[in-house]
Amino acid sequence: MEDALFYIFSAFTLVCGLLVVVNPFSRNPVTSAMFLVLAIASLAGLFILLHAWFLAAVQVLVYAGAVMVLFLFVIMMLNLKEEERRRRRPWTVKGWMGAGAVAVAAIVGIVGRSLAGSSIPRDAAANIEGATLPLGQLLFTRYLLPFEIVSILLLVAMIGVILLSKKDLR
Image (tube, rainbow, N blue to C red):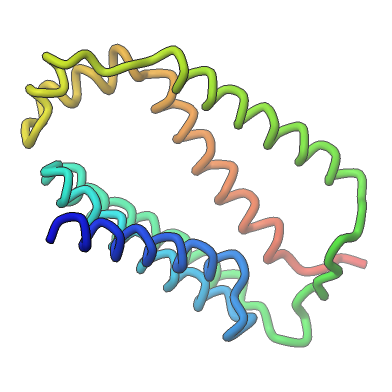
């Protein structure tokens, strides 16, 4: 049963994550935000399957609750009308595209290097299940750099949402 639930939750997470970016149903950013809530909720289901109850609760409370309220507040505060939205021109090359490609390559390199050089010791992995103290100690000692990278990625994502939703000043 756990294997079937894993495949269901992971497929649902991937589909909802894809629908956040490529939304064929609506051009409204609120719809993409709701798909992000569904992706976060199914990711919490994956954490429950791993017996990481605290991470599942934090995923739902912090990300699906507080962060999504912040994203929706920013989207609603911008108050974009359909005709005022920037027209999407796919596959256009601008000056920022090269910088974006360099940034993505740097992030992939950093994440790949940190994943290749790190491994959870078996004794620490046995203590993590369900407990918050060993998890916090591992998170803020051994895995501090990936934790900080994720926080920077969330900040960049929020700035990207604001810039993409901004009106054209021309």
